[in-house]
Structure formats: C-alpha cells, structure tokens
Amino acid sequence: MESMTSKRMPNDKLLHVLDVQEEMNGEMFYVAQCLEYDVRGIGSTVEEARANFVRRVKSLKRHAELEGVADPFQGLDQAPARFWDMLERFKEQGGSPEQPYW
Image (cartoon, rainbow, N blue to C red):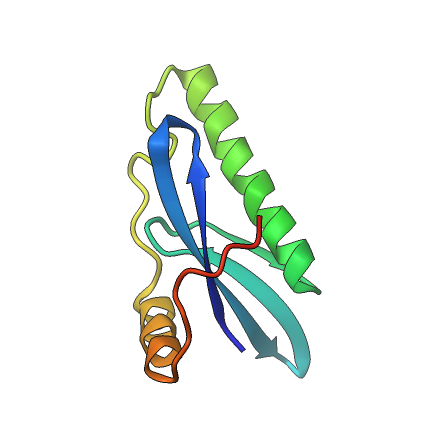
C-alpha cells in the first residue's frame, strides 16, 4: 500500500517521499508526500501523484529563485505525523524504506 522513495534534488537535498493510497468521500487517490517538508503531490494514479510532487518542488524552486531565497523549503514544516506513522508501519511490515522510482 505504501512505498518509500528517495530523490536527490539540486543543492544536495535528499528528499524522502512516501507514496500512499487514500480514500475520501468514497473516492481513491494517491499522495506522494515528502517527509522532510510538508510538500506533496496528489493524483488519481501513483505516477500522477509523483509527477505532481515533482511539479510542486520545481515550482518552489522557481519561486525561491525569483525571490532570491537560497533554500526553496525555507519555513516549511515536516510532513504531518500521520505520514511518519505510516512509514513506521510500513517498515514494521517488512517494507524497505529505500525503493527509488526515478
């Protein structure tokens, strides 16, 4: 159900992304949630969620460049605790936290 991936971003930031299938109002969707920062992509497939996550990170980087800010993640909190809890359950069930998708 959940998987964990890592992606090295420019400026040597290593982001860990948790892929999660969720349900709201009877509809299933996927979330690609960064753990270090509260940044996510949402989509109807895992691939769409991941692509939206990458778009969001690129958008943060462009905005930071325009504003002259060195760290595009400045001021962002970590992912909500429920995602960290999901990661712990995933590892307890034998999941490997390093399953890259790029």
